[in-house]
Length: 328
Length: 268
Figure 1 (tube, each protein chain N blue to C red):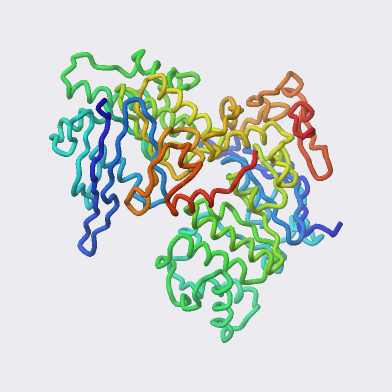
Figure 2: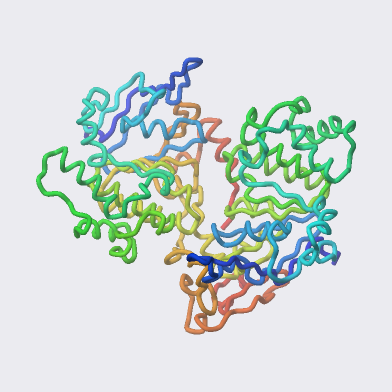
């Protein structure tokens, strides 16, 4: 197997909660709890989970926009975690990000051309005279007219802005693009176009994506492999197709909660009891046990370990056998 | 039987000095007692403005410029404002998309539920005024499946989760025993597992209380699982109307076909 482009091992990040007059630390929000994952060249890894599960924290930690507490982020075998921000700089051009909100992620006072050229100038990949030509190329690559160079972000629609954001991410010729909910602010038809654009760019440029979304349908459509996150942990990962017969009860509940656009279909829904517990007070044992329909005494005390149940399919649950995903 | 709601050639325009935007342009439909109807469309198609028009809540520069809205035989367009206020919340109520912005942050849940009821009692001259500590409040919170209703009734909106807020919104809407519940993207701001809970709740309450439900959404999945009949809107106009089964089995209009094709399929 070829080496991984990105390999994350046991990444942890907690945020202290400060309270009172002296801002004493009164607890921690454990946002990332031993997260391990890997991405190969040209591959899309989808990351799904509900709000507050730590998806965005993970994205930010991978780019070292926040400093992880412990763990390793191996990018082409170099560990990024101990690097200073100066040492990080040469790696930044390889790791780019597309943000969720195309309205707040573009500087309203910069022209489109300047926005797209900025990363190129920072990384000294072009000089000023080549700017226009290079930007025109990038605008065309994302399906926009090269004439947009001198316009401002407010002149564009949400979908067009997201294309500008993608052009900016593409500019320094990255290896990996982290897309954090890139279409959730857009209408379905516009979102679909952006997904097609991302897929086309991946083929042409052999890009890898970490595609973060709360939308399982979307993640399954675009990803080669999928990782499911719950309360700062990856509870299941495997090939995208395998999601239709999950190994972990949380994945199973997520899948069954999706409204299916087929009124003739009658199915049994697994309604989870209650809501996601607060990450400040993680439940004992398996953190999913208070909502899990399969939970037994053991789950309250003993934390399940992540195991590979079938080649490439990992899950952390004591009762994977009962869930039925293995036998389908 | 006379329909509960009959909308005829409704036109709601936004009149600015430069142009006129036809947000709702000649829309007609009916809704029977106890029936569930969905309006589906992309953003800007006029779904929400249609809903607001029904309650006569469109604010300037928006204006209802034509058509009739017959609710239980009365034309809402010709009623005096005072009468429409009595109608709102009592006979037709609305649940909004954003449970955080739709609730008042400085009132407790109990106070908020009471406020609506109080207002109606004043308007209709009923002497008995509901108190925040009243059984009725707890009953309503129980009805919408809130665990520990005593504690939640004393909480402020920021102290409870998004799913709980949406349940509180539904409780507020149900306080006046409405005949028609309008829900505008009630689950769009919620996570899938919570969305599933809230949709189940809406369906269950609709059956139990025999209300008519008008559900506005952009999500065909939500439509398929919740309503019996659907209206598809595009640019202020109704392009297709059918029962939910028919619409999914054989969509007629090219726009509906296009929308249905774009749904990422989930072979579950």
